[in-house]
Length: 151
View 1 (spheres, rainbow, N blue to C red):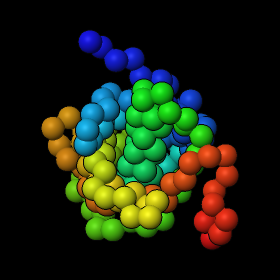
View 2: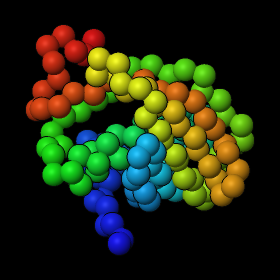
View 3: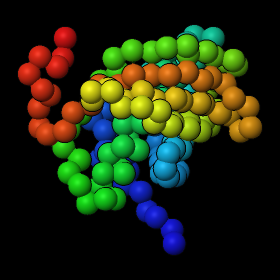
């Protein structure tokens, strides 16, 4: 059975040019995969044609957010809610990314501590791993964040 995934722009609050992910490829337990294409007008593309490394961190975070919303939608649950990246740990970039590259990001939920999701992310260009690390994403359900939840 083929699953049809929702467009990512309906699952996350980001809009172009800040929307850095293009398409959900798979959503399984415990991980998911998302495609991103580095276009010539990419927000984080530097003058030398390479992608700023911090963009890869944001791609991991957006990939997780889109897949979490997709999981909830597929389960018939509300997708009301939000989140923000609270921390990044041990994020390493191995290879430069350039305009025209197609990336696949694999995100895996490692833990959930009091509403903060601990997510391992790996970014690939074909078979090459270009980056990996851990992001901590504070998430909430409902229309508004909890009182005092955003600094």
